[in-house]
Length: 96
Image (cartoon, rainbow, N blue to C red; front, side):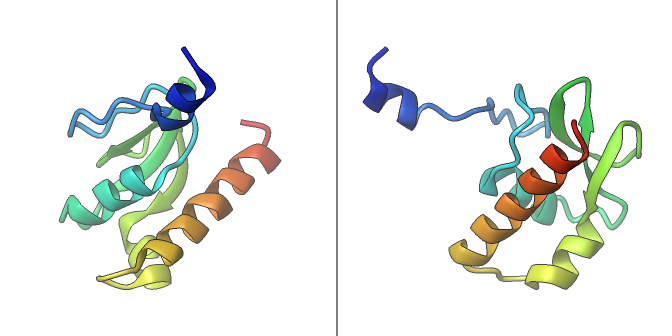
């Protein structure tokens, strides 16, 4: 795979089920969290994978409510990128 192909390949497969195959938090997974509509939804890291869930199993990274407080109901791309970067930094600092 060329460098260009690698750069275009996402770090997780977005199946719509909230499961990711990697531990990187992306704008797409944050949008999925916002779009769930479930007030009790969380972004968690469990087994080395980031996923959206309504149970709090695993390391809770952020709740839907907290993300809404940070970015509002209609965040722009820059806000979402910043939040993904902040959350990735938190994960690294926790050693996860």
